[in-house]
Every structure is written in C-alpha cells, then in structure tokens.
Image (cartoon, rainbow, N blue to C red):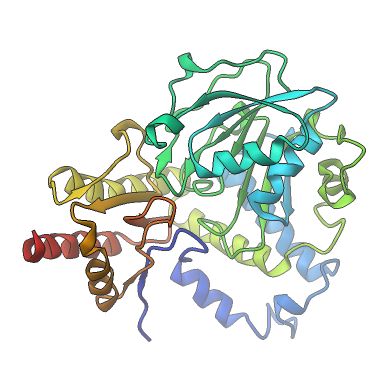
Length: 360
C-alpha cells in the first residue's frame, strides 16, 4: 500500500495508527458484533464511546468544569448562525474581527441576526496579518467578540489570546483546535469543524461556558439550542456517531504523543522547516507577516506563476497532493496539520529546492 503526503486544507490527513485501528474495528467493535456505524446512539456501546471521547477532549484541553462540551453537526458555517442565536441574550450587537475569508463568512451570517461591529480588519492588506489589539474598536455593550483563530486560506493565525474584558470571547478554531494547548477559561465559547486536526467531516465541536447557555432566541431550532443539546448530552437528535468515534481515537493518539504541548512542539518544528526555506529564497514568496504566520496552513507563491502547473505536476509525481492554493488567492498552500509527519515537510522542501534549481 502506498500512502501519499496529503497537504489538503480539509478534510485533511488522519494519523495512520487511527486509520488502522478503525479498520481493525470496522466489522466488530470490541466484541459487539457491530460496526460503530451500525450502533444505536442510545445503546451502551456508543454511550461508552461518546463518554470516552468527551473525557479525553476535556483532559487534553484542560477544559474547566463550568464548560459544556457538545458534539454537534453543521460545521463552522452552521455555528456562524448558531452563535448569535444562542449568545445575543437580548443584546442587539456583536463585535467581529476580520482576518480573512472565514471571518468574512462569519460576519455575513451574523448580520442576519444582529448588528455587527467590525472592530478591526486586515482586508486592506489582503489579510496578511492579525490586527494588534490596541487598534481594535470594541463595544463594551456587545454580546460577544468573535475571532477566527486560524485562517486556512490566508495562512494567518493568532499566537496570542485577545483580552475582551467582561465581554465573552468567541473563537472559530476549526483549523487549529487540538494543535496546541489553549487556555479555555479565557474564552466564552470555542467551536470548530473536526475535519482538520480531529476527525472526518460531519462533526462540529462546541465548548461553551455554562452561564452563556439557556438564553437562545425564540427562533432557534431545538437541535441548535446549546442548552437543549447540553441537557441531552449532545443527543437531542442522532449525533454523527462514527465521526465522534474517530475523534475519540484521534484523542487517544494525541495523548500517546505526549499531549498538546508535545503536539505544538511537533507542529512548530514542521512549520519552521518550511518557513526557514521560504525566507532563504526569492524564487518563492510568503505573504504573511512573520509574527502571524500559521503553523497549520502555509500559503506561498512561485515568483513566476506560469510555473504553477509544472510545480503541481512534479509534486504529484512525488506523491505530494493538494498543494494548490485556494482559488481566491492562487499560488500554493501546504496544510501541515497534526497528522502530517516531519518527513512530509522535508520531502516538500527538498522538492521545492529541486524545482528552484531547475527552473530558477
């Protein structure tokens, strides 16, 4: 069997040990005679799977006891609506910081439910940095402050936690959740799709402080009401059972790697390999401000974009896939999430050097 180096932004590569474990258990989970995909979500077998996944997530992230962990559906796009539905709590406005395409989607959706104050924006610079907090224009009466902690398209990441005072901080962490330790207690709510660092598409994780639930607007569908889902252990409706199972296996793998501090060191080492090379050459360019460069998604461009197709073909021959940049920005993008081994990044850098030598 030949495995490629998959640089996809998502759905992304999963750890090979997780895939092997899932394959072993596909037809018969722990002597149950059933696949996890066939189990009742209310049966004792899946209840155990669900409980272990939540317990491991809480352990790895050190989630405080006064936070609920919800395993939901709808992706981050869904949460763009569910957050204002649940967190406005009678207020009329919310603050958003615009650092890229995913922030823009969040802002657009939130405008259907409240007045959005764009407290800061990097759009004028084509989203190549995170605005410093002293430039933010926050409203002390806002229901919450929303950020996207890592922009997969632009490759911009917060390497610091904003201070929003008494106003709850909300973060879309779809693409860097579980890639490093997080001080969960500094956030009112964290959400993210699982398909980057956690598992397959279909699962959305929400971590929300107790005092922020129970105030959903009257128009909120029951399945999207955090309080109703929390009261039913995320099983008000049938949850994405197999995706939760895979997430639990990923959490086991993360714990075996040494936890999130060890994973952060692993991710920093990978990113440094690629950024150090990009900084050493003029053949490729990296547009993001150095202090805001993502550890997860590394966009770069060739000096001569007429070489893009040849670069991608050469990469594919060497079994490196999904390096084409997002259509909105062009160029290349290497997504190097948790499951990407150091060898994958070394292989990419070696190829980039080879390509530069032959085309520079």
